[in-house]
Image 1 (cartoon, rainbow, N blue to C red):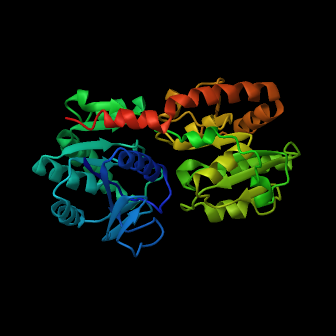
Image 2: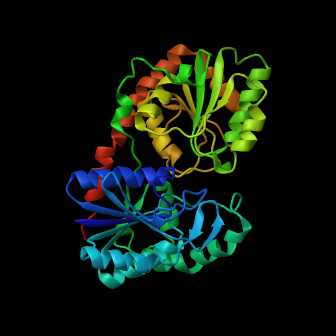
Image 3: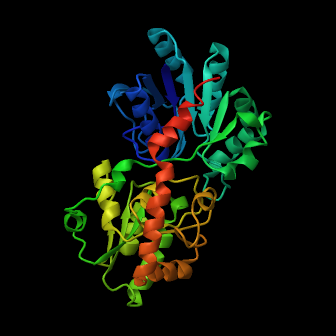
Length: 386
């Protein structure tokens, strides 16, 4: 098959959606399919000069964006033109797989798929949220999406993949034929099960403390990195964080400077920026003791399953898709977004109760096996037929 993935961003941009596309694409190529990715020419911070390239046998086509409305929202109206250029060159696509609901490019490519009679699969990636963290410039577009474009777009699709059952009540507002909706969660890579015997993570980053509490994700306001910082500072000031390091890892999406300023006075707190490479990510997880996900909202983060596979107890906000895949206390603990005091208590509870931590760790490793990318990939490919 010739497969086209359509998304706002792709590598070298870092994020869950980009990783999902990459994981699917590399397995599709291994199975003998030809894979193309169409995205805008931004890595979220700047324009990417190279518009055409091949990354691990994936043909990447970057279309210049016309205007940037927010950090994660770009308008790139020349997508249909570029798509048709490539389509004619390779003599047609068999499948179009679009990603992330609510964007103009999904509507554009949906019209083209219908016109060209190409199978159109769409993964929502659970973008549904309120206006709290949305720039005001986006509000009219969100209203128009809900009022008109989502209904038109979803009704043209052949298959719709929700990453969590939490989305079903929302999708039913836009989809007449509910049989088109499939639920397929995100996954994690088997490399995380492989024990790194000579783990140099602490030495590499100058971390001297015995235990690490980890935040790993985009430093975006919705992810709550500042909430984790407040809890870390309180624990350190109170003297309860002896021999505990608090670590932030991930690309900046507007919060890095604030976090750096907040943790600057404390030697046991470290912002390391983004870490690339699966081996290095596995090393990071295995050097840690607790994974914290204090988000305002989440679809279904890849890091949830990665942390499980690494045997880390998890402290997360009980939002959106997370409670469907994580149980308390089997996999860790839930803490409501912004409840700093409770976040502090749960961090200490896990770190101070070694028996509890080991039990949660064993549960998480076992549970994570359900989310292996090879299994998730097979479920996707079952839907690459009409």
